[in-house]
Structure formats: structure tokens, C-alpha cells
Image 1 (cartoon, rainbow, N blue to C red):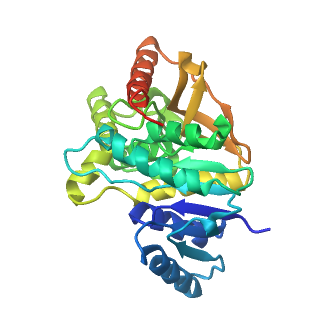
Image 2: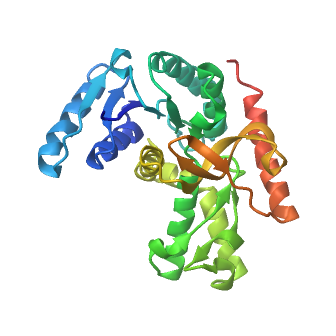
Length: 308
């Protein structure tokens, strides 16, 4: 039986997610959006690209949710994008309404459903999905740390002039200004970056990573990042569908891990067919632990404003 993914939102992120999914032949895709004609047109365009790219997966564009029945995975990208000067927190009210409405219609009639959340503010939107769907905590996963770590890896590669394939970066915490990049757990061919560059350059990379999304928003003026976010979401889908047991930084619902309880926070997890199969607890310094708990408190403050 072929796998089926519903992508909610046919904007830049959602459409790019759908395209990457079918090009990798991971699943058939239902692309849903409220704007009439947009998912249908983009879906048809993607199907026609299959003749060139050589894939045979189906893409259906829809303004409704009947076609989503039987989905194995839902990727939520619907919501307002940030504008210059707007924080992720500013998006909370409107995107809560959008995500709650979409996910309640999508989860009907789907089997052993997993949900990957991309919409910002990411960690709070994960909680919206968990509350609405009543899914097990391991089945609701936020796409945050992979993107943040990818940005940090790119900045390290740019700084040192080395291949990104040699670089591993670790970023914990909420997906926002309070994220916690960990330089001593970030390496080039196994060597910590703290041994390869000055403390000042490390600090600059940490700062740029935390502001990575805002930097792109400021360049684009009328939109936000979508190439890297879509790649991160599809890496998660691939790990789930192929049961890779891949260690990836994702937003997970914590119940005591890292001394944090009852909130989604970015941490390393083992991602496989069971969703989040295990949370990995790194040994943190007192300073790192305090920063992570501060980030979690910031997420908790947002969650306290939710109405669902």
C-alpha cells in the first residue's frame, strides 16, 4: 500500500514540501489550501514535472478535506508568515485559529496518524495540535531543531570553508529568540567548533543562528524562509516512513526530561516509524540547563495564552 501525506497549506513552504515528497517518492500527497485553485494548480504543475523528474507519485490539490482520509502523515504549514519586525509570538492568535480549524478536519478517518508541525510559533502550535487531536505525544512532532541546526551548520561551513557534510550542530529549546545553540556539542569531523575558531566567532555564529529566520525575513520583505524549512520537514517524514531511527533535534512534548514538564521544546530525539521513539538527554552545564529552562518558560508563557 502506498503511503499518503496531507500537506496543509499550499504556500511556499507547503508547496515545496509537497514537491520534495513526490520527487523523493516517499508518498502520494494531498495538498490542501483555502484559496480556490491554488492547490489544484500547483498540484497539477507538480504532476507534470514528474514526466521530467521521473517520479510517479500522485498529487491531489483540494480546498476540502475529503481527500485527506487515510493519511499516514499530516504536515501542517498553514498560517500567516512573519513580516519584518514581527516576532513569532505576534502570530500566536491568528495561527492558533488556523491550525486548530485545519487539524480538526484533517484527522478524521486517518490511521495511526503522525503530525509534523511547521507553522509558527512552532512550539505553541504543537500544543494546539496535541489538544485538538488527542494523539499520543510521540505522534505530534515539531519541525524546529533540524532547521535551526541546519542554519548553524551552514554558518559554520561558511566561516571555516569546509563541507557541510562534515558538520554536526546541536540547537535545543524553543523555535525563536530563546533557542539554545550548543557550541561544545557542535563539531566539524568530530572536533568541537570551540577548538576551531575563536570565542568571538563562535558567539557570532550562535547569535546569527538565533536570528536566522528573521535575517531571511528582512531580506525578503514580503515572506519568510521555505527552502530549508521544507527540507527539514521532509527529512522528518523520511525518517518516520523508512523507520530510520534517526537522531534529530525536534520539538517534543516533555514530561520531566531536562527538568521540564508539560511543554513542547526542541531536544534530540530518535525518530522512526513510531514517531518520537525516545528522547535523548544530553549532559548540560548549569548555564546551558538554565538557558534551556528559560526557553521552555518562554514557550509555556505562550501556551498559557492559547484558547483551545
